[in-house]
Length: 291
Image 1 (cartoon, rainbow, N blue to C red):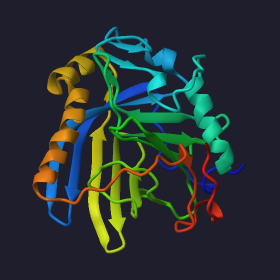
Image 2 (image 1 turned 60 degrees about the vertical axis):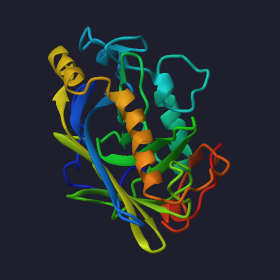
Image 3 (image 1 turned 60 degrees about the horizontal axis):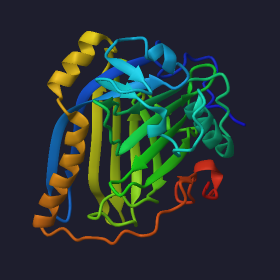
């Protein structure tokens, strides 16, 4: 097992915020460059939650609950493999199970999950990002959990390798394994540009094909305490946000169709989890898919 990059003698870069849960109001932007330009942006808010401190997070406000209906809520079952394990700590065990084959030792470290919460009982997360820290609070790995509107999910496990982190954030790359949109082919590569959560957070994904960039998707947000006032304000500012996310996906897809963008057939779903691929050199070589 290996920890994150060696930063001996230096302060931990991008230390995780203290506390159990926060809101990150911000903006989502998608920009397609080719074969025809298409861009949209909208305001959203994300939840950042410590998967080891769910009970504590659930005490932050009467308008926020863990595992039950509320104005805002978080359900462990919305993430991971959806296994029948309902014991407390299920999500942390899921993350640890993912990290083991990747050679990441996060024992004693924190795991923070950035995702959309349920609003009035409903949520859809096109992508959820787990920020994994070692016991010295150094970033050790990122886990990208991707869903499509066909009810499928794939998880990219990305240990943090030397050279991937700088003062600007974290840069990682992975071959695309999972069908997300009928308007995008499979022979693609993801270039992740991440600023781990602090006062702000940023997630940028550049999707490229053999001829260069084709789509940029970003989320940027600024941290807000998970208080009753902040929850009510967010829900009034972004009413029915998670329903709007799903509706927006289909609305933008319809506009792409009218622009004549080519449709791609949906291939069989890959194994649920993938590790490093040969092109990126992550983990030194291509790792077997983890069923």
